[in-house]
Length: 192
Image (cartoon, rainbow, N blue to C red):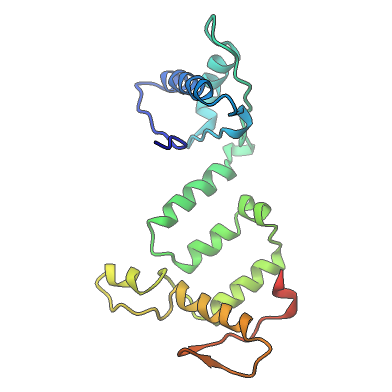
């Protein structure tokens, strides 16, 4: 079974870190090609766990190998941009996919850096979303789960269909295809 994400429940933060250390050793024993730089461990409050991480990882028990580590996201005020963004992504998967939530996620530093978005590109995406009247919901099925009519109107699926159709038909004067109006406000610079 895939064990790339695991959850363990322990009686104290110190014990959590000790179990984590043991689990990492077992993982690396089972997968010799696995390297420490391929492992990400997240916690909602890294500042409170940092002393325990230092205690366990910096001085392993006698006979245990040392696992190289780095504690990241110890910014001013305890900001944790990568962890916060990951948690927002998880929350989004259980949400109504409101426009504000998705655009806030796209505007987070880790996402912007990963995809290379600059301010102009984010503004352009916001413009497309607004022009195509995307409000919430992945599709009509999302709405149906909330006892609303199963309609794609104002959903991400409807808006993205219009945008993609506009991109595909940008050299055409046609406005309508398969009952979908093409969004023709894309520019040649939007190809990237």
